[in-house]
Amino acid sequence: MSERGQSLGWTTLFEFANPKRFMDVTGAIIPWLAALTAITIGAGLYLAFFVVPPDYQQGDTVKIMFIHVPAAIVAMMAYVAIAVASLFGLVNRHPLADVAAKTAAPLGAVFTALALITGSLWGRPMWGTYWVWDARLTSFLILLFLYLGYIALWNAIEDEVRAARAAAILALVGVVDVVIVKYSVEWWSTLHQGESIMRPGAIAPIFEWPLFLMMGGYGALFFLLWIIRIRTEILERRARALLRRMGEV
Amino acid sequence: MNAFVALIVRDMRLATRAGGGALLAVIFFAAVAALVPLGVGADLKLLGRIAGGVLWVAAVLAALLSLDRVFQSDFEDGSLDVIVLGPLPLEAVALAKMCAHWLTTGLPLTVLSPVLALLFNMPAKGYDALLASLALGTPAISAIGAIGAGLTLSVRRGGLILPLLILPLISPAVIFGAGAILASLDGLANGAFPLLAAFSFVSVLLSPFAAAAAVRLNLAG
View (cartoon, rainbow over the protein chains, first blue to last red):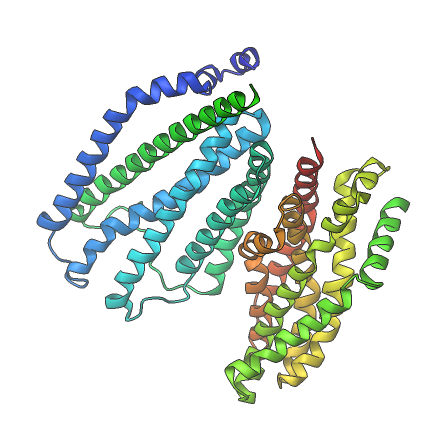
């Protein structure tokens, strides 16, 4: 594995794929990542609540954006992370990739739910209703179901290797399908505002700063929790292997 | 090719003869559709408008109900092991089983749908779209459903988890299929049919590979 990896130039990636190496490196990273998360989210929230003025149309509800938009972005990012990890798991048959995919799913589901809930709380004063069957909302609801199905499949199959393969196939089918789902619901109905972060001038600079801080903070929080979950899973598997060995003796 | 056709014929025989349940899926389809007026009321105008969507949802549920026939029963009695050893690659086996599933669920549901639409008082101009959208879209249900059937082979209570895996994935078929019927009721031109056909085509084209991979991992070891 390592020789092939080096010839392909994947050296660094596969060095981290060694669970021991992974534990050492992430163990050192965790405090820094935790500090980064706390600072960015703390600063972002401070700016959002005490510095940013109310929007001339939306009033104070505009501040929901700072916890809503980053959650939605991380929710989608987590699915991509699962798909990439699943591809590595299927192709390279590496247990760490399987663990990475497995542990990212509940996080993605929570961020998806968070985006849906904060969005509907914003929708009540702005659109006059908690829920509309709009393209974005519907596609996020479907994304949530995809996450739940993925998690359920992991839990339903007892054999770890088999569960990992099955879940990886589902994730890869899902990543193709999620693009079609997104397109189909957009064709079906659209009310949600279009994407505005990448359009210069669409968001006033005073709103942009806390938003970018929160996006960085949510991203860091996701990676922090993901790393902790992967470490926990590795330790759990070690403990289980030890117990099995003791049982055999 | 001969083995391919033989497998389809075999699966269809198993589905239509004693205990196969092909007829049950069709009756289930009618029963679900019949339940809707009891739930939403007997307003014929409303029923005529939602008929297309109701029949699409009922068709999806009926197709889900019979998915265990695709791989599960063969897996349990060991015939899947024999089929895998046969001349067909597993991808072709999966495609044959999808075809057999569609011929015993999707096709009869499509044929029955105008009768149910009549009970729903659907306006006459919707029938062409109803038949065309179900005929075009139900293969996608069988194809994607077969992936789920393969993935849940070794799950003890796979029947519970299978719908959760499959329903989000086939939502585009429902959107385009029911959308096409509504558009033709409103007399609008719309692009739903090409999109539905494209979704169905891509599903049927790619699903055998995913389904075969899913079956393979459950047979290994």
